[in-house]
Length: 561
Image (cartoon, rainbow, N blue to C red; front, side, top):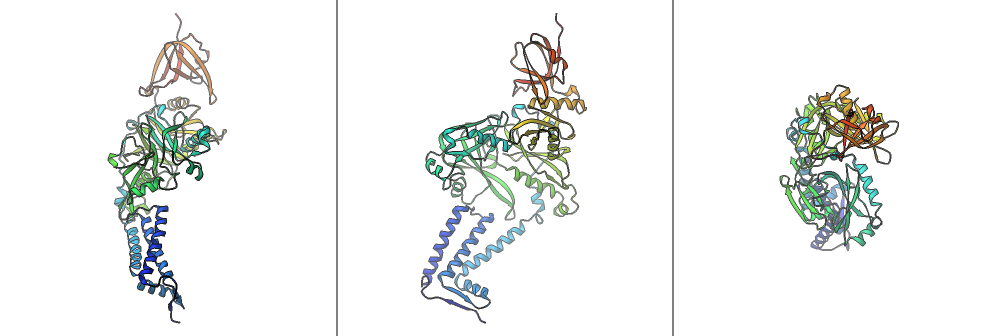
């Protein structure tokens, strides 16, 4: 049976220009709504842009079918549709075909199988010396919380503010930064619901939350002028919408909330570029800094981004680039068959504060992803300077299991480790938390020998026990440990039971610091009294970040007279 194409009379505009104008108007309206909601970058390297143009073409053709009164009868209706597009929508049909071809070819030429060397060179990770590059970090710089615990504390702090809790809520979108020399997590607050947004949008968001990752103190910082631009804004002041209308062709990674050294709030929007083929080789070329209060935007190339910015490269992007570097080291075929020298990152990452920057840490293991690491990466998240450190030993998951095994009777769960340099040894530092996401104790696990596990109710106690175990197991010699001594008369003496061990805190006359000595390490500590003259062997003080409590390794009572 032959196909028939008929048009019902009296349906839609009668003139061809009228039908075309109607089709265009409907397409523009629907396309405008779609663009406003999805915000695709007008960029041929953005797959979402192809989807947007494809949708516009389909909408126009469907409108043309309706306004022309098109009907296909009989078998082979598809041919009738093709004939209609050729006769009524030829330019749109050609554009649709070109889009499909360009997209498919772009995907093909961007595949690692054809561009293995380009993918391998996305990230340069030269070898570094761990002891010299990663100096012993002061306890005042060691984050003791993970993301979940920090967000729990931030949310709990919001609940204490009666004037805010009914109108605003914690956003659960925190960013780890270095603020005035301290590792902290910062997060904006958000409107509690759409009604609260409507009644408060004129003033904006009045505060943000800062969680000190060392002291575990959460603080709500009130602003003299509210933040008008945030992700809780549903309309034009939404962060992504404001960026898109100001920079329609730029592709952006997820913007991160940060504060500068003056405490002013900003949104940091890294600019994504594709460096391989049409869609491959994702990298960062620069960033737009948006003032969260005024919405003022400034673009910087990567080399010119202000130094107070800590998060330009996402950890997941760095890990993806290293995985290309590690798997394609000898070409694409070797990455599938043979896998000679093939390496990859482990399943997680964490942050380290060094040199007033935030570094991402992740382990590197073999292609078989067994229970041992070959080494680890440290990457500066502002500059992408990355180094690989050879340190064979346990994976992060194996170290976590060792730490949890020591406190299995308490049911504590480990966080993802932080890598530290303790007495020249690569060491996993692992906070352990309870079911309420509160950190209860700390563990230190030697990377090379993960049977060396020390725990303590404080970081100081864990470090003291860990250094003792290193000495007892012969990993380091006592003379190599950073120690010094202090002598004097005891003016103040206190004691406390931490993690089942008794610690004595001694303050000598004329000094303000306390020396902590474990009864397990020094039996004489239990018989000391105020007024006794003693000599204490203790950890060397950090000149840049002096502590109020120093680790004492031993104490001896001096003879009177």
